[in-house]
Image (cartoon, rainbow, N blue to C red; front, top):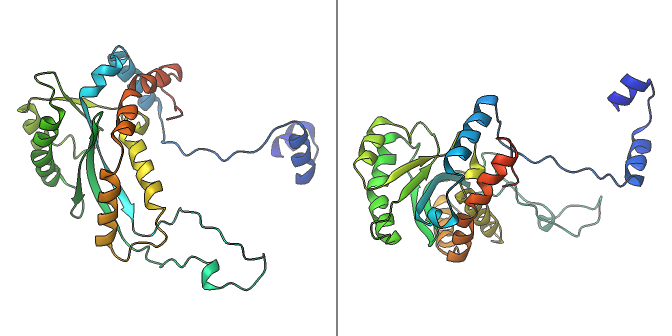
Length: 257
């Protein structure tokens, strides 16, 4: 509208514009939410591509993908429908009552490999270097045993969170039989466990009632996490070459992942 007025000095009504676009087969779409990518971010993504684009899908089978995630007790983004006529008086069945304080949330850490979901841990309060190190010390040896790679090189993929880069964490990882693989900042599309989180969110949304407290939320998260099919984790892991190629083709910009 503004462009038409600026360049052609005309002020069509909104409905005229909508009808014209409709006749031309142009339909509006919601903009997809994507992370901020600065020039530095895009450059780092291109460098990541150069380093790992030669990896075959089989090599990603020996990568342990890990990440943190926050789950809210009240699924405020879930859409619930009602058949009540527009303008009718609302009953309890026609509304979703949400507390003003949001209902609380929990933070979790989890890992995934091509063999399936790994381990999940409830974070206590705000995650700091000490707690993150304790999580790795407890679960990484178990993840290595579960991989059963028999001497094959194994990598731990994580992002560039300050907690992940803390000196005490790096010193401990340097003593372990594992390589650390860091994805660039603002690049969730390069960590397939993000898709597992999305699946988990959808599974949690299938419950008819919100959890009564954070304890029940944690129980639901654990159940749904361990119910994740191993085939889904394998497919996500094997998608890494395609993800990297998508970043290459976009020259470090956003991808569909």
